[in-house]
Length: 206
Image 1: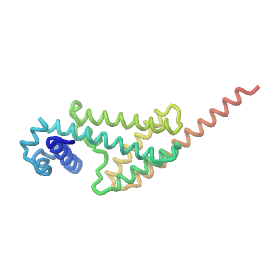
Image 2 (image 1 turned 180 degrees about the horizontal axis):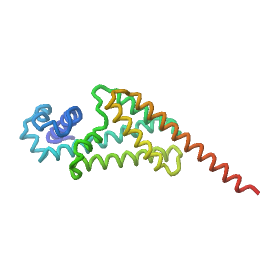
Image 3 (image 1 turned 180 degrees about the vertical axis):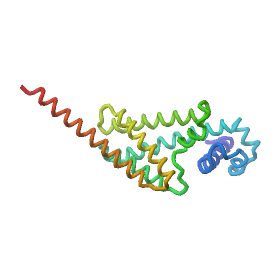
Image 4 (image 1 turned 90 degrees about the horizontal axis):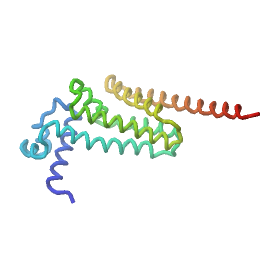
């Protein structure tokens, strides 16, 4: 059972996430977060020693939620490589269509604190993006792709790039373009694998 202290801490983290995501990590102050959580600033500081500590807690919580979302996108398919990649970008498109979407909070945090490489938000963004790439590797491996690291990194570039372009231009067509590029990459890998198998068979023939 959650204690009252745990419930208050959770309410602060939830309120902070909403304010940070909409208004920016640097611009939103602890007074606004305390008001949104229905507590005093003194109570907030009883749970978090600083704003940076609160930012770190928010990003830790969002890290787990986003990984779970990515797993749901990739695992809710028939399991083929084409289906997994289609599901990833389909899920991204659906997420980007939700009201108030502002792109990846981790990417935005890394940009906001670009001049502070040691900031907790920068470290959290690094850990998160590494974990997402690892999760893509796992999904591609489960779909039957051998040596998936290169394709996983290419998908990361497409995922990050299309989100930023949607934010810049307000056009979701960039996600569709990224999905088509990802499909082309998958087809190219499949063709190379088929050709490799054919060449190996020819070499083995007397």
